[in-house]
Image (cartoon, rainbow, N blue to C red; front, side, top):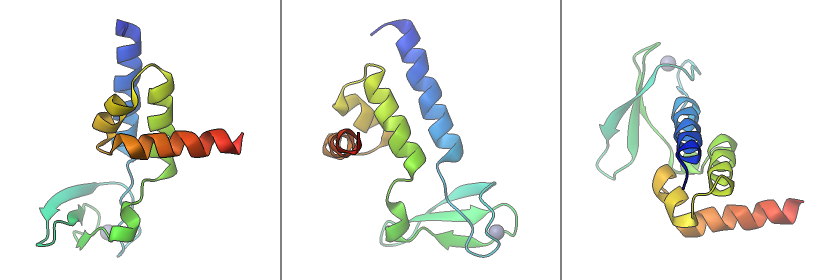
Length: 107
Ligand SMILES: [Zn+2]
């Protein structure tokens, strides 16, 4: 892998982290949402920097947002293997390949 491609992927990862969306159920704010540990069942807890409310991300909401999906696919096409993409975005490579398959079908 060339250096440039590596930088591309790091940029993609950064963007994903910035927009990787939790939203406060209290005030609806999407900014200043900080990770705040986990509850007993291992669900991610978040804290809103706007209204200070803590909340857990519903399992349903853990489905990956379009943004992440798009970035994962981009990373794959900029030269990462399915396994590498999975590692970068914290998902299984099967998941990545599923997305690729679905994307191809949409064409
Ligand atoms: Zn809030």
